[in-house]
Amino acid sequence: MQRILLHGLGQAASSWQPTVERLAEPADVYCPALFDWLSGGPAGYDALYAGFSAYCRSFQSPLALCGLSLGGLLALQYAIEHPQQIHSLVLAGVPFHMPKRLLQFQNWMFRLMPQSAFQKAGLSKQDTIRLCASMAQLDLTPGLSALKCPVLLLCGEKDRANKGAALQFQKRLPQAKFVLIPRARHEVNVDAPDALAKELNDFWAQ
Image 1 (cartoon, helix red, strand yellow):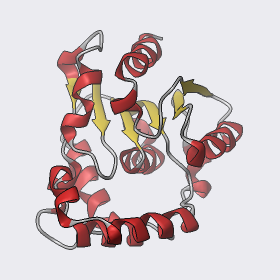
Image 2 (cartoon, rainbow, N blue to C red):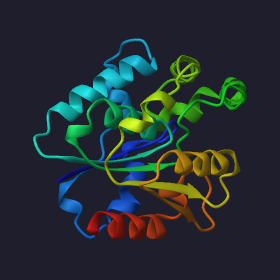
Image 3 (cartoon, rainbow, N blue to C red):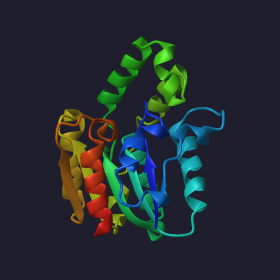
Image 4 (cartoon, one colour):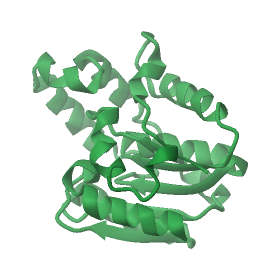
């Protein structure tokens, strides 16, 4: 089983490092840089998903996908479209349909931020805004019934924007387990790597 950890918007592959260091079996864990898949082209969700799909097809064994926010959306869509390749799915702070008002507010905040704030994430300010705008119509609700694999839904205790969505998510997926990560905000891999790694170790061990 290969385990792939997908970071969120505003993060980099290194955002997973504190969590990976605490995993029971870190050797078969992959933390790709999401925006490398854009290959210098226009920053849009469809292009990003196409790059991620090609990346997943390079693996032979079943995949355990784990994604935060944007990374979770990619993982969720791939699991819906390729259930035969998925061993399990972990989604942290992931809505199954995009909250348009939240996206609009997020993009408004991005416009106020300086260019330098986007450098570490590997995506320019304008590309970040374009990527967010391209996700406004994304709705994976119709495909949720295709998910048959074990699912772990995670949310930071202080992530008010996504806590309600996670509970609604659980109602639609009877097989899903829902866990709140204590004292963590949206970026659970940054705020609480110890607690996150424990949940991942327990889930994958089962």
